[in-house]
Each structure stands twice: as structure tokens, then as C-alpha cells.
Length: 275
Image (cartoon, rainbow, N blue to C red; front, side, top):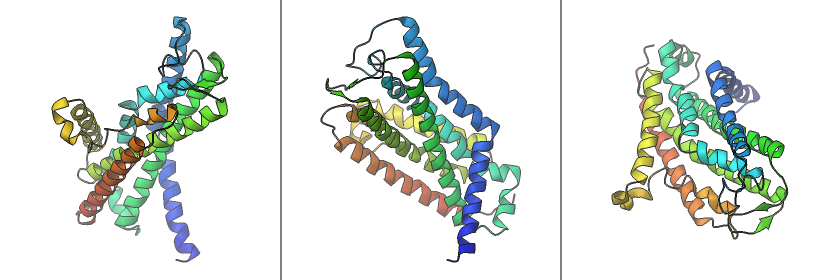
């Protein structure tokens, strides 16, 4: 592929990223996500209660790094999937709704390239959302709480630098888990020209997976649910670190991403674009 041919997809991706991160709606969503760790820190500080390091919330008063971890714990089940669903569900349906999809395909961009760029932008959005929560959690924790050694859930104390490294791994795992929501949203987005419907369907299916995971009678299928191991990142806060659960979670996530992206490609490849 020539340099000119390589620059065209890069320009398209930059344009898509600019559109995703430049929308006022998305900027507001990122701001709201950033408030989660700040509100947690302020609430814990205002309560004046001394916590215990045996729990994530209890460890906040002992080390502010736990504020970022607590924020990811709170935002993980609903808030993060919601903001990812907003972008992924709007990816193709939004273009169809506004009448720009037909124009994009006539440039020509190509349907496969279009889906690849849309998914890449959604993946970047996943990383950005998790980064906002983690970084603001660290900053708020530094301002309001101690920042010395970090006592893990297993009782062992590690350095603050080691704690930051574990937080980075936690953030990477959470962002990787959210790729399933991005892929699901992309698939649903190819099936409708109504962005709100795609967003609602994506979030509903994600929540349905979490509800099914909470029903004991469905234990036989819970290991295959995409959200079953979303919180296994807590294993990174123990010593020794147990990686089996996270490895299985990443494999299941990868399987669902491949499935939904393939379905999106099959659906969009044969779709009659009239708007």
C-alpha cells in the first residue's frame, strides 16, 4: 500500500475521532464520568470515618489511590457501558439518520473501512472514558487523602508506584471489557437508522447480561456471559495476583468482539443504504 493510500484511512480515522471527542454531548458525558471519583472522595472526606484497607471503599482514607479503584467499581456496571453505548450505538445509525452515510460510501470509503474506523474510534472512546475516571480519581485522592504505601486487599503493603502500576492494569482490563459493548453497539447500529433505539438496545442487552449473571438458576451459562468477569480486576489488588479469572474474561470478551464485529460486517455489507 502506497503512502497516499495509507494517509487516506489515517485522515478518516482522525476525522472520526475529532467528531466523537468534539461533540458537546460526549464532552458532557466525559465530564460527568470525571465527577464520579471526585464525588466519592468528597463524600468519604466529609463523612470523617476512618476506613479499613480490607475493602476498596474502606481503603480510601488510608490511601487516595483507592479512590480511583472505587470509582471504577462504581462506574463499571452502568455508567461506563452507558457512555460507550451512546457512541457505539450512534456510529452507523447516526450517519444514516443525518443522511451522511450514503455520502460517506460514495467518496468512496468502502463499507469494511467505514466499520473498521467506527470501531477504532469507539475503542479509543472506551480507553478515554476509563482514563478520565482513573486519572481524576488519582488526582482527587492525592489532594484529599494520604499517598504513601498501598495496602492490598490481601493485607500486603506495596509502594505507591506499584499501586499506580496495578491501577494501570486495572484500567486496561476495564477498557478491554468495554470493547464488547462497543462491538455490540456497532452491530446494533447497523440494524437501524434511529440512534436512540441503537443506544437503548445496546445498553439493555448489556444490563440483561448482568441481570442473568445474578440469577443462581442460570449458573450453567453465567461463565459465558460477557459481563460475568467484569469485576475480576480485583484480583490485581491481591498478593499473589490470580490471573486465571482475568484471562478467561479477556478470552470471552475477545470472542464476543469478534462475533459482533463479524455480524456488523455481514449486516452492513449487504445493507441497502438509501439515506
